[in-house]
Each structure stands twice: as C-alpha cells, then as structure tokens.
Length: 247
Image (cartoon, rainbow, N blue to C red):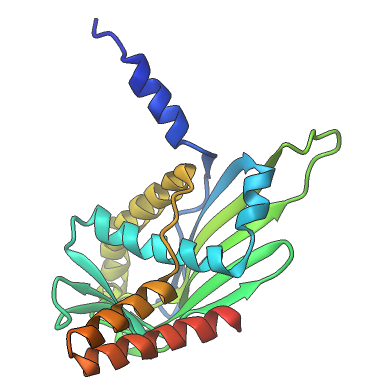
C-alpha cells in the first residue's frame, strides 16, 4: 500500500481555509414558454474574523471575477471572458463565437447579504425570444450564529442562479419537448457540474484581485506601448465595473 506523504497532507490542510458542503437542490425548472431556471447552493464555514475582513464590495467583485476565471480554467482556455464597457461576453477561443453576452454587472451589498447580477443580453446559446431576458446571479448570505455558538466560526450560504434563460437548443413549437430533453442532458448537466466544482473551489478562499485594478493596469500598459485605442477601451471597462460595484 502506498504511503501517504505527511508533507502533502499538511500542505493541503493549509490550502483549505474553509469547509464547503454542496446543498442538494432540484436540477432546475422549465416554464411553459421554454424559460429555464436552475440554482446551486453551497454552505461555507470559515473563521469569523476572515469573513468579517472579506465582507465588503471589493470582495464581492473579486468573487465574481474568480467565477469567470474558473470557467476559463476548467475549460482549458477554450472559453474566454471578454470585459467590455457595455457587456461581458463568454466566447469560444475567438470573439467571433460569442456563446453568451451579458450586460454590465449590478452589485448589491447589504449587512447580511451580497449579490452580483449579470442580465443576459444575447449569444449563440440564447434563443431569439430570450434576448435581454433572464440573468445569472451569485449571492452570498451570512447565517446568524446559533445559540451557544462560540463565535469563532461563521457560516455563509453561496448560491449561483440562472433564471428565465431561454436556451436555443431548447427550441420552440413542436420541437420544444425534444429540445427540453437535449438541454437537460447537455447544457444543464455541464452547467451543474461546473458550478458545483466552482462552489467547492471556494474552500481555498483564493479570490482573484479586483478586475477594476487589473483593467487600469491594462490601460497603462497599452498606453505605454502606444495603443491608445486599447487603453481607452480598458479604461472604459474599468469605469463601468467601478460604477456597477459602487451602485
């Protein structure tokens, strides 16, 4: 039997800074008009001091950026996320193949809940009647401490929800029944697997830096290289993200 390396075990424990448990939820629902809704939920337990430090608009933005980065990483770079002043796009390798396009994000930060919402715009995966309808939303909610709790640990519920989405593969008319089955066996199944993997990855609490700061850096680099058009586009995207985060 292969011996377990104690150094590797110790390193893994150091990397895992929170406990994540996926909460079983229905795979999704479908309305009569073909719109689908699905929601995945995870319970996360971490040190209360760490949660208090992270409970602000900046970390909500960092959670959102980490979500998109995870999508790129898990797809081995096939899927890319483009940040534009008036949209966010998920593309297949090239901007010429936009799978999904979203309006700029809306951030909401409350004492016990944080939420970021991307309203669906259009894309190759969206049926014509679903353009500018529906949304993708990440929500983080603090769970009140139980009676007798020492207060050292804190619990939050993190959820990812897609609502009122009209998948092109779902079709319409006589094909809708077949299309609904195809969607459940392909897009929906992949979405659930990837989202649950993202929620489990939160155990490391390894959130990417603010996208606004990265976009500002991109603008400075582009300007230093003499590409004023790229610099202005990066600055406009940063301004859009910053306004959304403060709104």
